Each structure stands twice: as structure tokens, then as C-alpha cells.
Length: 582
Image (tube, rainbow, N blue to C red; front, side):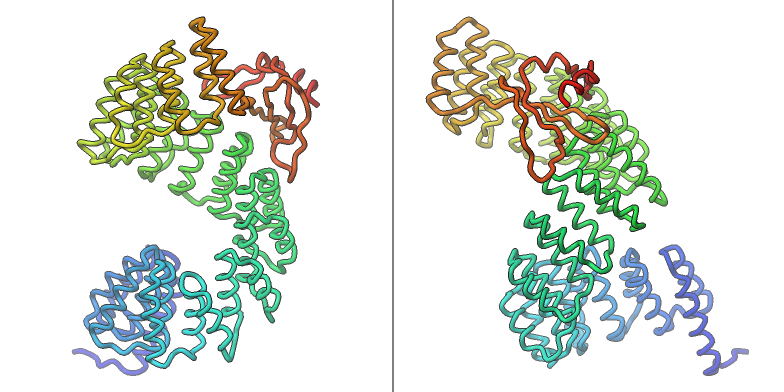
């Protein structure tokens, strides 16, 4: 006997589902609730499916693909479900799905409401689909929604970001009611297009400023490199979030002010603000630029402390890159081996890092492992492989991989691949083959390719080919001192002093000066000494507190204090040297 459901039963079921949704905090829980619905017989209940799709799209954004599957099970979705799918798709990494849903909605002649078009417009903004955005603008006017605050604000946002800024301004001026969303949208539009004067004027006129508007202005100044103005606004923000801190930290990194970036991170932690992945990526970039390995290790420890599981691919890649470029390839390998999820970019980072550090066998071995695992390499992968072959003198293997790249993976070689092959042949002393290779390249050789060949000619003492390579370089540009020095050294190494003198005279006549060499060492765990090898020692003044806290030009005898080892820089008699410099 089947008992007929009463109103009380329906109310009880709705309350039960509502309680379940409050417990829905992750994808696993979502699927468990869906299973509970199936057991209780709610799987065909439209109201229950609406709630399930809403949770899949908005409560747990990572479950958007699950929402797509659920949507396909509904024979006649109502407008609420359509709008929910539009909204979730517009916010997802694949906003073009929102356009697809809207197109299907139109085909089925379902009348949109005031919420439908704003979601489509947001997708157009993310995709920079200006023409389709103008079509949606026309639809909004046609359906009489232009005066709706939600639709109007989204129109301002669209035109301010990728449409017509004058239209955005006209919509703003014509609004009877301007809320903080409208003010922020137009301000952001001016700021993103570099019109900071207009953006600041609007910002100062805002009757009420929300955190978004503060962040927009700070980010605008950061992108222009106006860090003093950005810091001034940062100090005035009533309540900051991680976006505010990230804007300042990334700004300092992009401006080369690495000490300030790291200092701001310390300030952030002291105030109890939790950093996110973006924060850590900026800080790791600062460590790479400044060569601060110790600081990078501290950042790594902080990442592990704040993480709840495995490293993300993005963070893992950044750590591999940081350790590699700061001279600790062993730590790079440790991070790589510890990553559960790896992408092609991850393999590229470690293969390239090993290759540039001279660990050619390990680099090539990882490439072979990558192929065994059926992970498709890309053009960057092969740059690392060619560098590894070049450093190990594996000419035949390098030729084989060059052929493999084209034949098996359909990757057409670019200028970097050609440059690596010239280096491979040049290091092996196959200078005539290298010269022929350059002359038969399918792309126009650039200065780096010819300079690579010139360097090989110096190493192997081929004066004639060196002269030919230098002629090509001088046709491209005559102001690169290294080209003159290389050719002069080739002549000098063979006792052709007249030739060396002619090159030096040509260099002087062209007004080209030899650039001083430089080296970096770390001191006191944070300050970096910047040595410029010149004949006249003098202190270099610095502006904006660059990370090179003690920048000094010193005499040519400094190299005896520095012992460069494989992949890492080590100082001998460092205490005495530091005392002499301070």
C-alpha cells in the first residue's frame, strides 16, 4: 500500500534537504547527498534537482562539470535552472559554456528575465567577446531591462573592461541610482586601461568605498609601477584582504624591490592575514630574481605549514624553478619527486633545470621517463633536452631528438631549438656543420644564433668562420660589445694581433664600450652584494632600496675570492672579504 504524501511530508522533506545542503562543503559530500536523494526517491523531483544544481554550481564551484551532467538529466529545466547554469559557467574557467547555454535557451524560445543577460555579459567580459557583448546589450534594451540596476551595472562592467569606455561612462552618468558596484566598475575600467587620473577622480568622489574599489586603485598604481602612490593608498585602506596584500607584494616584486616584498609578507603574517597561492608565487619570484635561496627555503616551509595536502602544480612548478635558479638542483628534484600531480610544465621545469646545471644524464633520463608515461612533451621540453645533449656532447642523440620532435610530435622547430642545435654542434667542434646548419635554417637566424656560433669559433680557434659570424652580427647591430670582444680574442689566441687591434679600433670608432661583468653573493641571509668588475672601485648609490644593499665596483682582483662550483656559488675567505667591503 502506497501512502499518499501530505503537505506535511513535503515540508519535512524540504527541511531535511535544507539541512543536508548546509552540510555540503565539498564535492565528496555533494555526491553523498545526491546518493541520499536517489535512495529517498527525490532524483526526479525538480525542486530537489534545482537545489542540487545550485549547490554544484555556486556552493562548490569546482563541481561545475557535475552540474553539467545533472542538467542533462532534466527534460524541462525551468528558467531558474537555466540562469543557475549560466551563472556558474560564466564564473568557471570555461565561460564559453555560458554562451552555449544562452544559445540553447534562445533556440527553445524560453523568455529570459533580468538575471539572464548579466550572466551572459559576464562571460563575454571574461572572454573579451566584444561583438557578442554588444548583441546582448541590444537584447537588454529590447526586453526593457536597461533600467534594472543589476543589468545596468553589468553593462557598465562589460563596457568598462572590454567594450566602449565612453558607453560605460554614459550608462553611469544616466543611472538614477549609483551604488558602490557601479562606481567600482567604472573606476576599474579607467584603471585597467591606464587612465589613472580619471580613475582616481572617480575614486575620490565615491560616496562609499568598498574593498573592491580600494583594491582596484592600488592595483592600477602597481601596474604603472607607481609604488609610492600604491603604498599611500594601502596605508589608508580601512580593512584589507589577501587581494590587497597580494597587489602590493607583486608590485614590489615587479619593480625589483624584493626586500620590500618580503618585508610586506612578514608584516602580513604578523597581522594574522593568511597568504594564498598568489602570495607565495610572488614571493618565490622575488627569491628567483634576487637569488635568495635561504628566503626561498623559508617560503617553502611556510607553504607546507599552510597547506592541507599535496602541493598544487602551480606552486610545485614555482618551487622547482626557484630552487633550480638559486643553485639547489637537489631540492628541485626533491620537490619534483614529492609532487603527486605533474603536468608537462612540471617536467619541463625539472628537465630544463637539470640540463642548465650540467646534470645532462639525469635530464635526458627524465625525458625518457616522461615518454614512457605517455606525457606529451611540448616545444619547451625539447629546449631542455637539447641543452642537456649539448652539455654532455651527445651530438647523435641531439640530432635524433631534433628529428623526433618533428616526426613524432609534429612540433616545428623555432629559433630557440635551432640555437640549441648550433650550440650542440659548436661545442662538439663541428663548426662547418654548424655554419651550414645556420645557413639552411627554415627561420631567419637571429643575433643569438650567430653569437653562439661565434663563441664556438673562439673555443675551437676557427678564425675564418668567426669572422663570417661576426660580419652577420654587425649587420644586425653594431653596439654589442661582446661580439667585438669575442672576435678580438679569436685573433689574439692565434697571435693575429693586427686583426685583434683592428677589431678594437672598430669598437672604439663605433662608440661601443666593454660592459663590466657582475656577480652576486648572499650576505647576512638577506642582503646581496653586487660586484661590478671594473678598474676603478667606487660605491654605486641606489634608489628605492634595491635588493643589492651594498653595490660596489671593485678591482679586477676580486675573482680570486670567488670559487664557482657546479650549480652553486661559494665564497672563500668570505669573512675577510666582507670586512674589506663594509
